[in-house]
Length: 325
Image 1 (cartoon, helix red, strand yellow):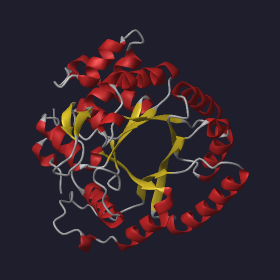
Image 2 (cartoon, one colour; image 1 turned 90 degrees about the horizontal axis):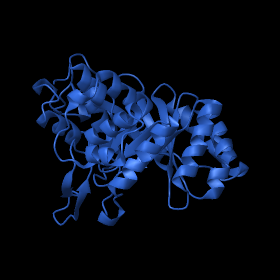
Image 3 (spheres, rainbow, N blue to C red; image 1 turned 60 degrees about the horizontal axis):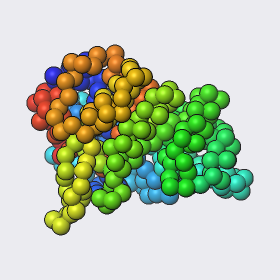
Image 4 (cartoon, rainbow, N blue to C red; image 1 turned 90 degrees about the vertical axis):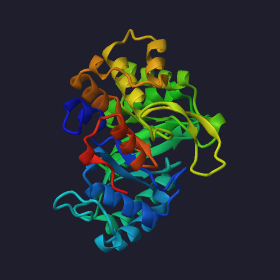
């Protein structure tokens, strides 16, 4: 396969939302923005999704975007005629779920201030939030009404926490999706702390639960590599090691669960945990594209170089699409 192969494109196109601000990379805002603009202008840009920005750092982001210039990007490997500053920057905003009418009014005011600086420069394609408890779940309809009013083009992903039961949240997201056309899950697949990495059974259960509900979702954390393995969880010399899932298996598990409602947890678990490259010929381009459109919409990663390097090492990309650093 290479970058022109339809199946590879179906699997990898716009897959990786760049979250360089977050662990284990933990880059500064200026470096993260410059990296994103450089990746966006490079030959592997077809694999790049949105830039992930926390709401609380929105002004810092706008300031960094203003300061980002091509002169700051020495050695960038740009595609022919590409300009890293060309067009609005597509972003995913990590937002709070406002608690009560006063908090929603405050968020509306913050939004107005943000959009004054973002107009014409930023395109908000998705929101992500964490549901902390029954109170947030009970107010989800009011919150979604606000988000759709303020960000009419954005998908809305919500992640369950220990105080918010997964199935209850997914059912609520289904109701919102039917009501206003927005609502998607979010699956956390890794951590820099070994004990916080979810077991494969939990990952598979989430993927199957979303497929059964026809609910799209996004995955984040620990999916820097195409295949699962035990790896260092940070970039520090004394990093703890732990299991890391692979992005190929996660997407193929989504495809299998959507194609075959009778697929067993064991079959899905094998796709998620097998360290060997799955036989991609078992999956059609149509099946994988459906999994990307109605299942796993994107993957958040603090690295863009590592996922591209991994795809390159497996022969999924042509050599001309090696990542620019």
